[in-house]
Image (cartoon, rainbow, N blue to C red):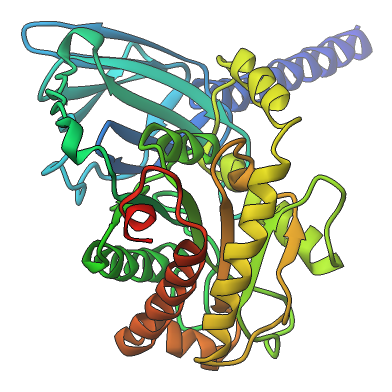
Length: 399
């Protein structure tokens, strides 16, 4: 009888241990499930035609998005998430967002509200970890079609049909994509924007030329959209300005690249093209326009004339760069840069220096050296178009 009671007691204690173990495991699982993702950071960039908000998350997160009126708002509901950062320090002076608010929704979910300055057309998508970035939720805000203002186009009299040459100047990277970085903290996106602005001023002073800055601020632009903007402005030349980087800090000098369909001219050219083309992976590309990609592939089948012109102007710019310092390659290089894939616009990519080289990093930060780089590129642009003025341009009329 005593043995039977002892056995029952042992059985009961074992059952109790099992229950408590299951309870603790369920509690731990529940706690992890309740907050499957933490919102660890919020970043905002305002471009001329859109505003981008990026939420850094600890894991992939399910979300839904909708808009409200009176007042205009975008509401984002995130499943099993909590906010672990402060919504402070964001610059709302530009763009569509006036304020960002958050609140718990139910026991497990999070609601984020974007208070807006005007009605928008939102788009959202998630990104997997890439490079220095982890999981991200991206929300892009665009002006609604009925809110877009159309500028009046001035009719040019017959006597003024000769036009300025349009030079599209593209400062590489931007926004959440900093590009390469120097040991002292220099960001490629910052110094290249400074050089691009200096070049634009020089071009605008040049008789018969006009500059268009593809990026004139710290915001992200997809590679294909950079090319589209150049085409929209009917550019006669597209020049993308970058800073090179390599694992060996002794690497130095400038380089000029044009597009090649037949293969890169060196292993470094292949490595560099892979790195630069990954910019869209960092900034994030929604896959809702696959038809446009197919169109661009078809257009890419015929552009031999554009590549030939790119080689000529690239050679002239490389000559200008040789006059101010060391060049990494003495001939124009070939690589498969996505940003150079234009059917009808001569396009080149200039690697101004190696930001990974401490000496050249210091030079890139120096306004005086930035002026030298801009002047060297202008010399090459001027030399090419004086020999090859497009029909209908003011330079062609002068000749």
